[in-house]
Length: 131
Image 1 (spheres, one colour):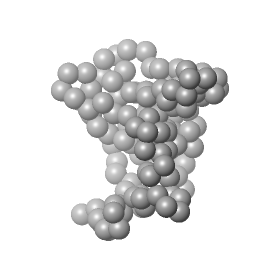
Image 2: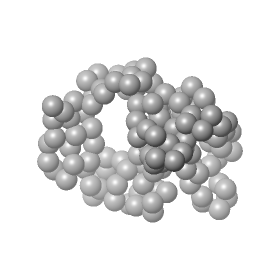
Image 3: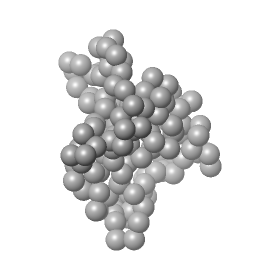
């Protein structure tokens, strides 16, 4: 997969909902494969769209670091959609969409299962505070 430039999109919430084994994210990353994460929210095989739970499952069961998990949710997700030239990271010339957290330490994210640590979203230059 790595040699072919494939971005493996892993769905930890689907594995959770179906009580199936989790994808081997750690092994894929170690072999040089780019990994993206998604929720796959749907009424049949994944009843949650929770990014905090996705983060926790990726870190715990897929053995991904928090840095790898953030990259999988952002830049690699954009790469899977062939849009990494426009979105997915904060760089000059890219769309500046991002979130502001209630902590200055992103290492807390896997511990926020069921909690929203986002205090503001910036999308398309517009500020959207959390109510």
